Image (tube, rainbow, N blue to C red):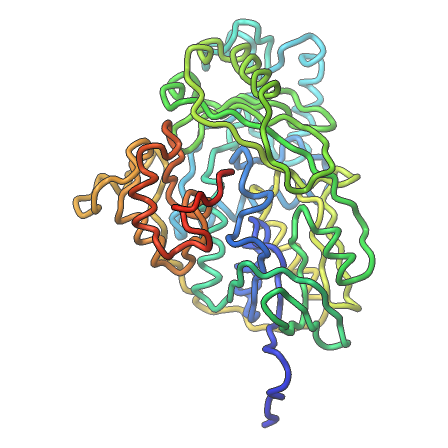
Length: 470
């Protein structure tokens, strides 16, 4: 048996670059198919890029361009999510959506949209008159003109979902390296030798899931790219939980060529969400909010749901979508370099991630690599459900006491996450796994206790004012 050359860095079958929702789903898929996987994320935590801010809707793809790769990946991702969510302990609020028209022009587009939905296999839609919409959603503005219902649109947890994908990958052998930026690399015809900020490694294949930096990574490793990222900012408002009684469905606008438009819906955490905007910008990292845009969102929210005018805003945030010069996803295989670039995954990435991972694995299969799929994959230890519509950890007796009273996060939940297989290395990471400090006071009352509990856990201690962007 040949001996491994000790002078060479460790070799993996597949290196996945980028720890967003697509990277997490990709790690799970390749691991379940039997590959030895390493996931490389340049930030201190996974989900620190585009995946940290979105509307958390499980889309059906009813309005995606028929025949597009995006539509196919959404449909397959939606289906696989429903198949695995119980085994992974993932919450889902099956509330349906109403596409609402507010003008004659929008009413005129409804028939075409419903035809498009049926062409995409979403044939359970139901047209609604203005009276039927107001009967279903009595707090909606009387200005609504008509619309249709999309029964299978639903709400999900945008962070526990990709965490669960990655936790299952970890439970079956994936390695995760955080704060690990790929700085260069070359392919020798058999393996990639990747240079990273934490040292070199080898991999049989590279899957580029770098999101907002995907085109730059292509340039760095291939010397070329087939797309250019054009960051699109989306600002959101989060209204207090008292607003959740005002709306039950996801209220969608009639979409345009550029954007799905401003949505009003509950979150799975019991708030009401309004957004996003669609703002082109050059920066790949500026996810700041601004007063004028948030004021516009607040006016828009009150136009759609007038009683929101009397409800306090709990928080505001912005997400960046890695849009490209084309509307469809930009997934390109380079078999001669054993490399797949997964670019241009815009706002539907959360819904499509599992479908994208299957599509990429099938492309990769054509490279000739052969793995043996796991016969009985291990399931991860499931995290506590953070959904307002499920039982919560604070209801258990041995919870260690409540630390965050706004979101009812217990000491036991925080400690379980800190000692788990994917311990957060930042306050932002801890927020995404527990919701601590994400309530009405935004950490004003619990930050001191939290600093003591997390002492030594974060790359930058909470007591030194670590991350404020949430």
